[in-house]
Image 1 (spheres, rainbow, N blue to C red):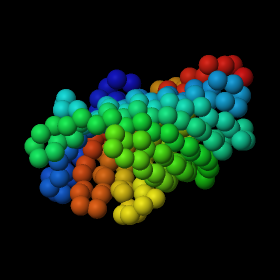
Image 2: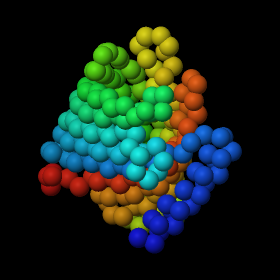
Image 3: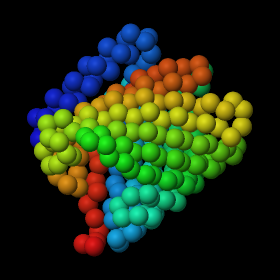
Image 4: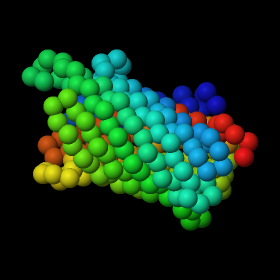
Length: 225
């Protein structure tokens, strides 16, 4: 498994470097942990940490921590969730690094579908963003696909492809905030854990930037129900 993940990471890093050079944009890296753990038959605890870098090595761009509690409207699907996020950002302003802190409340709805090998996920998210000198609201919609490659289902020891597109819209002007397009290869470790290494291109009004993304997903339940 370690060898497979290493190959995935180096492949994605190589592709990301090519794409970034072609687009003349700087390349960053996001290292991510996602937890979605069952508390009961209907309730789940969402938890995540994302460590985002400007240069893929150690120049912190953003530290993002999210948590929340969700409820399945149907069995293992149609999840509504209320969550909180803490975001520490360190952008460069006129060549000097600044620090900003944001507190974020969010509500989301996730529904999943399956068509043959295609595992689809729709995520609708509303965010209330409490910045140091401002308050903003934003809507996000993400459409994602997981497609098993080496087996017909997302079973343990399966290599799979993952893609998504997510659009961000402000409630005030300008309405368009950003759009993210992502592609990756992943590996199912067991029924509760998987890893991914991918490349994401983020398009904003005046900027187009590439990001290497490495993620670990943990769905170990806290209940046997």
